[in-house]
Length: 223
Image (cartoon, rainbow, N blue to C red; front, side):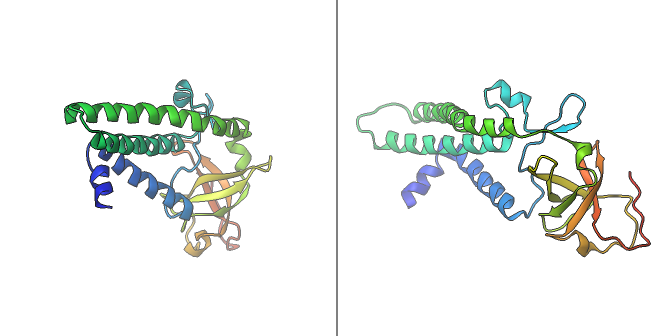
């Protein structure tokens, strides 16, 4: 175990080791819904009016419509595996007189290149799934009832699950409105609570929500 840690924390694997820790933490937060994270990449058309899986930058590199977080996670993971295996092989090879800096740089380049190529190959089937996903206009979600998936919804964070008209389940970023009337219980925005989308904030690209059941004397004013 100590030998493995020594390799993982040496150059060049250490370049990917810290990134791999961040990847693991990121996906754990996605699974438990503890943080406001973008699980599905949200793109817009020229008018900013649709939700889909398109990503022009990554498409230029052959990644299709796979979200940035998936590509980066695969790239870091594969790069870490390649550099760990490469470093292990270099250390175990007898009769090699290549300077450590040169061999480390070569392994790092291999990790970057193989990681990118592997990520591209692995995401190819996933891109078809995202390409086939129906685009949903922001306006189509206004009036939809959704279920809170994070611990709560605040003015600065929150996510909810909503089903669009095509039957697709979407995870969207939601916020409470800064113009929300007083008297609304915070418990109505807790995890698993049902809220309704009443507006879309074009500046912050988030949906504004209110509880499904409001007190009779509370009126919602759109921002």
